[in-house]
Length: 255
Ligand code: BV8
Image 1 (tube, rainbow, N blue to C red):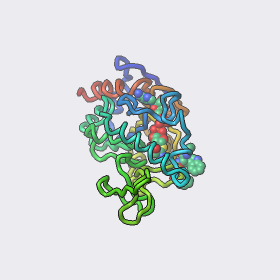
Image 2 (cartoon, protein in one colour):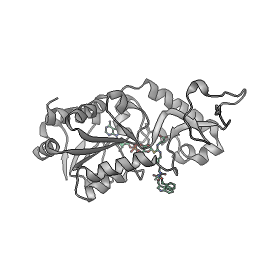
Image 3 (cartoon, helix red, strand yellow):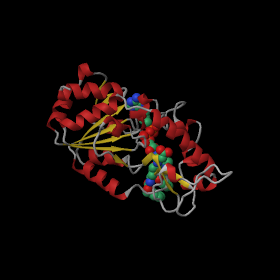
């Protein structure tokens, strides 16, 4: 395993491996959006869940038990995300896609920042917080069709009157089947895989880079901190993704 701290010493092996790679698969997590002001999930203190537990909020049972608290937590996060702008890390990945045509970008994030940065065809494994759907039929309902009942805080579906909920994947829920199958295929075929800004704590998304490295793909981890998977990667780039990724794209593709 190699650990690299800054552009001045990106190892040649990393540069040539990326230059020669035909298929690159990337998994991003909350860390890539941290420099856009969106708190991550598990970092102590700043992490969204530092004050609360995932099982209290990001599960169907939690919504069943206390729809108002869950709805309002997501409404708060929707506001956070609506004002956020992509950072240099998101933009670097959009640039990378121009040089590596068979690059597949898979994200666990629900914040649309990769799309805002111009990355084409982003595979969102955990849905998107800006979309709201019927909690019974799972059809997406635009805000102008939400039914607000007098005295209630959670809007209802115009078609079946069930409560609305965020269109994200909660713990215990299946990932979108087609999207996950496309992500699995990309990680099965890639010669190079990245895990960027993710603690790797949430399967099955977290299994994608792990399985690829196991079958011999060249693995690159970009993370501010060590993760329990760091030792598996061929190259660990320790630092902020918003600093490292632009330097890496510049070093490999000169842009
Ligand atoms: C599933 C959307 C099949 C909602 C999220 C027991 C029973 C049942 C299930 C399970 C079980 N044990 C395990 C499971 C699987 C379960 C699971 O993972 N549980 C956890 C609690 C262990 N998974 C599921 O349920 C998944 N579905 O398995 O379906 C199934 C079905 C039924 C029953 C069984 C199986 C669905 C999981 C989806 C959950 N939804 N989010 C929302 O956003 O509210 S998960 C949530 O965690 C986010 O999506 C997030 O992306 C994801 C992973 O977190 P990270 O992105 O990695 O963020 P984190 O804060 O952890 O780490 C940030 C990293 O960035 C850190 O390493 C930090 O160092 C780094 N960093 C910080 N700043 C920077 C940086 N790096 C670089 N630069 C920086 N500047």
